Length: 129
Image 1: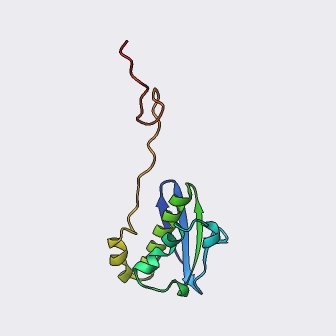
Image 2: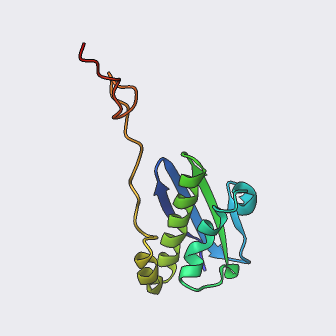
Image 3: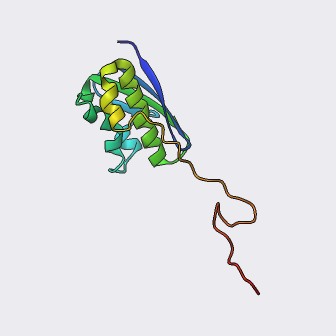
């Protein structure tokens, strides 16, 4: 099996995922994923596509380059990239991943600040007199 690559995006994060035959090692920016994401609530998000398609992740090595955004956006970008790579590997994985919204790009980003306002929509207190 050759290397399969896919891209996942979320907010300002972009993750380039490379899937290959291996022993189940997940490397993110040169570190193990548990070391890169020490937060316990983000670690299951990385391996969630494997649990949805009920495939053991110990047969694939995953190497990820991720940049931009925060930790939550990066974790969700990686999740999307892994899902897309698995669909490239086997088209049968598409329907269970699509039903769980793993292949849908979540395009919600922070609204920009407008001039004359302290935040994007918040206004200063109005005084009639």
